[in-house]
Image 1: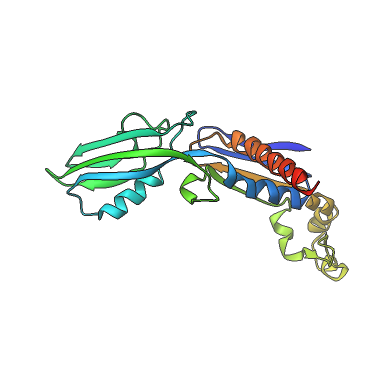
Image 2: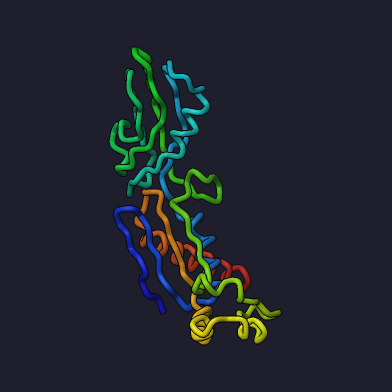
Length: 218
């Protein structure tokens, strides 16, 4: 069961309620880092008059989300003169996302000239290839969190002694503790992929890995 709680395409966020097992949810979460995405991997700094070291500028370039369906290497240029703040949107050709991520500030007459190459990679190898963040929690009313206990089998419950201390309103909410078996799964995209596509692709990656495992153990 999946029930959409919030889907904010503009801000790259997805949240839904599900009754999937925690182990499955965690496997999907971990599989996000195995989705191939594009990221700047090599930077040649021809000129850098800014206050930042070359290494810092190169690091910032590597973390810029690049939205592309290409599986081939891509080349980019960044040539700017101050005074101005240089953003990811100043990179040419366009990186495919409209996120105005600041790279460096240039004072009057300061120059920045960079040539960069982007390649496909996976987050398990380097976090710059991460397409986003996936996380989940039990779907529990926040007012009840202090009363929830986890038994030896990992099941959620509330002690009878704690129930007696609750107001009538909270006692009614406790009766719906069965909802705690549901999870709220959240996905936040950095911009390379839609949040919905990150969830779908992470499932595809997990299926591929399970099929490969099945072949190896036969």
